[in-house]
Image (tube, rainbow, N blue to C red; front, side, top):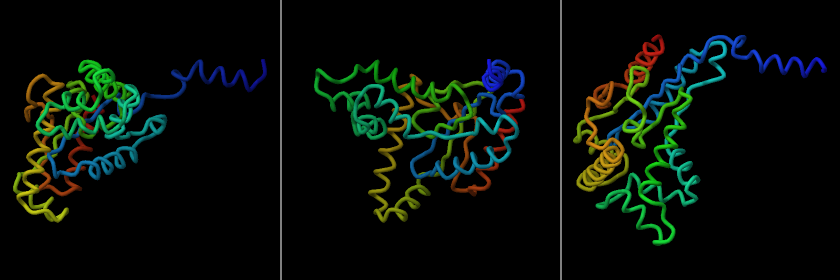
Length: 233
């Protein structure tokens, strides 16, 4: 047995004993839900940047990360269907989102309601299993376990504020923007309800942050502080 092989064997055999403490995120999963018009990605990116800057030792090998549309991509791949089918989950018009998905297939091709639900949920659960991940939207609050380890965040703001913000950003009329927001909010609520079995309440979130009165820095600071406190448990 040569020395390099032995060294590799010992490294694998005793990695649990010699590599130090477990990752600082301790398997924690964060979900960030947001009302339409409340930008979540910039905030999550900054939160992750701050958390990863504090990692030490072996924890650097397990940095925090975030997922969003990747969940749809993995679900579509597992079911061998086009990605745009899963995009309909948050764009379901007046139908239930499952009916809308099914209508996109011929009667001989589409996956069953149960299989779609199970696959989508399974992908989120598998992504969250290792911890150290932030799930943005995608009904994460309805699927990721609610316990003292995980953290469920809601980014919210008054409807009038969101209408003004989005109308200005996209150059739409306020009436058109209002209709878009109301439809989008309903679709997101329906998607969460599908998995939770009931309407999601504010009390299902650990923290609700008003993006109309708080700065990005203040919001990030609040989320990072809470994550760090939970990691001490």
